[in-house]
Image (cartoon, rainbow, N blue to C red; front, side, top):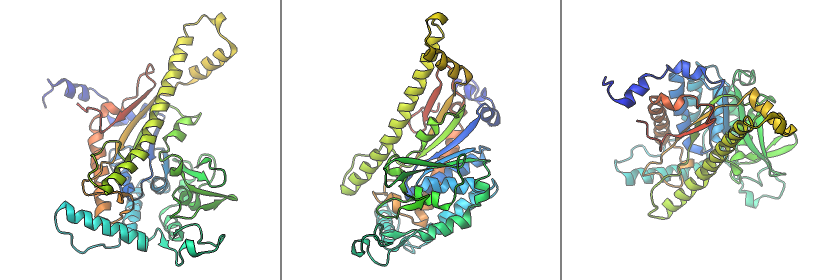
Length: 390
């Protein structure tokens, strides 16, 4: 190895992975919503697990909540097998027996797969209502959604050990929206007992799926308000030094659209990714401003401090959390369209999983991104697809 290269030398001087992780009190895996693209998150987790990284806080919305619950609800030796079981189940319906080579044929096959999902549903997940909701009377069971998700509850019960999930070895939080009030609501295993309906509520995207009744309130998919659960994690008062792997399924960067399908796909990417970036940037600014205020107040003579100043200093002196966020972002294939989040073919599932696995393995080679930020910074954000890894 050429140790005269400064970049290589810097990497070689970094501590081993176990020592890097030990400097954090929490390792979090934050999983965005994105339907069929969620197989990318499963690949990310497989690569993390193989590298010896075991998140103790899992936070998800929509399909991210399903993946997070499967991970949290199984022992380490079973997690990847259960994830694979879920994704192979929902993508088990064959679309074409053979797809000729070439982007145009793959795009056609993907479109056929998306149409099959819309017309027939997904095994182990959802199926179309026998009567269209527009033809049902108000208040009828099927009047408010196009699909029935009862199959998902059975699948979750089969794949998740709810006792393991709720024993608090790993924290799980899933985002929903209260249909009546419009308020964001997180269900958190640190606070309450989590069951299948909490996970279903986080993925109940209207008007496709029905709202889920929990404690006399109805809940929809949390992605309606925010498609990333990072905000909830950072708002917690008990957050400590934390390494966050945030997995985003929609990329802010993309190609210039060349047809209407590209326009719809690009619009969807920007809409979801902009919320993620805005939330991350806002919390980084707020966190670092609080740190600068703390450092400034330390230079103020004690007699000039107000009671509020002293209270703020006491809180910050007790613990100033250092947070490191590593973004892993799915990059759309050239033959994918606006239907990429409901195109559940087995071929696409395997491609998404493999992409998440390889992206994460490549990321973990650059351990400098995992080093805890200095107290003078407080919070660092690494965008894997923007930062120079050299």
